[in-house]
Image 1 (cartoon, rainbow, N blue to C red):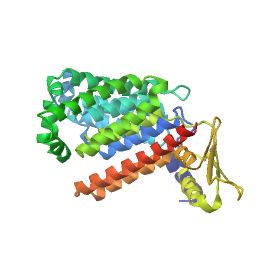
Image 2 (image 1 turned 135 degrees about the vertical axis):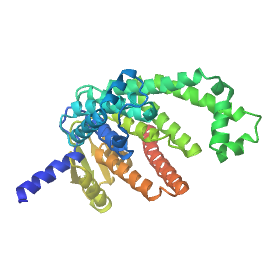
Image 3 (image 1 turned 30 degrees about the vertical axis):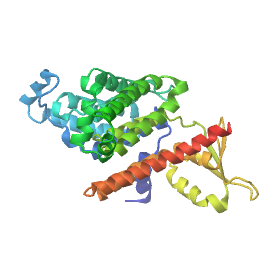
Image 4 (image 1 turned 90 degrees about the vertical axis):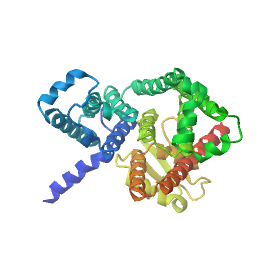
Length: 370
């Protein structure tokens, strides 16, 4: 292979880590790529099969032609996922990939899981968005997810009585925290309290996420709510938590202009090298600060200037490959600790809460200075 061909290959592969210059917002494209990676890691390709007890009985007709349905959908999934990951007709690729996953679910009741449907719908709706308007369809999807979840609970007597929560946490999961606290309270009091909190929280999220003024606070509410639930139950609900975290990236607003970053060479040189490795879009412009500058880092965008940890927080949020790196780390940890579930849970919980405390502390300090 000559040097020119090798350079072209490297340039093409680097598209996997590029998010600018397509018909999608960079954060929405990031969401789509991570969603495809998540589905693929969870073996969605091998789960796509001929119809088996389909939601739509008419799909049974494909069973008269064994493997045709399966191989067509698998081929479309590979083509759509490849195109999406490497920035080829990303909107069309997102629609195709989402449609394939959704159709495979409709063709097989055993394949139905909330987290799979949520991912399929997110991909399909992302393909209907563009790079000129906010992804309102994805905002609406999150609202409908929580509205449906809350209504489903409102209509179940076992949620109002606490019976469901008590059976789930007490008998099925044998959750030590729940069992310990419940013994000091009358029967089902703790179960009712947790049930009411869950129902009201999901309903509040469904409403508040629709309004721009309350959207950012609601995002924090979602993250802390599900992290708390994960910490109490040590259960990921399939890959629902990961799916939700990835879809929330659609709510980010990455500046369209260059990021002008000034840094102290003595204190922030390592940061500069780290972000230069992640910045495949070449969107960050790093400039060394004067030696007497009181700050060690600053970020200037078209509408604001931030310093130190406030600047670092936004630089992280505006670097799509930071989230790609987080997913890679999560996959590696999962593989290494797969047979050590307690250790896996502890590592995951510590990592997630550390991220929350850092970003929330920085955000809170920024609010106090306003």
